Length: 267
Image (cartoon, rainbow, N blue to C red; front, side, top):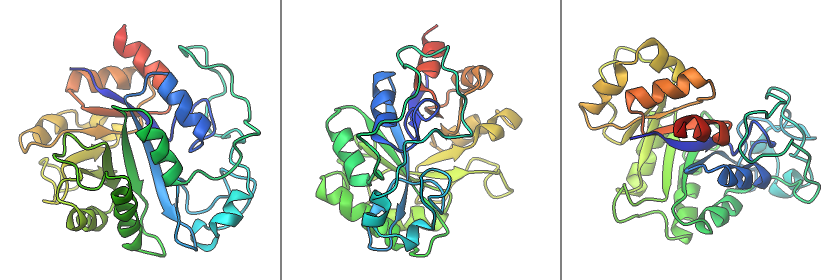
């Protein structure tokens, strides 16, 4: 079975990350699922921003936790991400990137959920960022928002349209306390002595190793599988890494270019 293609911050190799344009393009490119990072604004809104500050991805400056939603909405988030490739020769559908003057504002998680709800079958992976000023309030706000959409308590974890993720085991545990059926991923940047064998905390359903870990230790996928843990891996853009994920039986593969990944998987 081939890995499901997850659009990392949208089609972020070709549109500014965490914008409606990036996610719309990801769906057009055939992404099976979308991924976002969430943080809390000063006035308690969940917004899709990866970094602690808005400096890299907007025309403004400052920590997300110190800015109101109204202030963040005044900034432009559509400028080109300077760290991403500028060529799209291997894209299936995407034109060259251009700013979208009609979509300059910060993307709220609520707006992204509206997009997901309008696309049946699309799953959303939501990463809560830590450490943050507001601690566990991030997970509480997330679950409360999902409840409003009827997404916080799916019938089974496999039925869930939402998957919560974090590098923080404490954050994963907090979500499990709010919902017994909302699936969770413990993201892993290293395999220490506690995690090497494939075990996870009881509150985590799936393992989320970075692709660098699977390159160094491909047998980790099989070890995790012996404990019933499927694999979500990030961030997979290199053709050799895409092939590695397919060979190892990775379940979900996060990529900045869904079209490229989809094209290679179908060849």
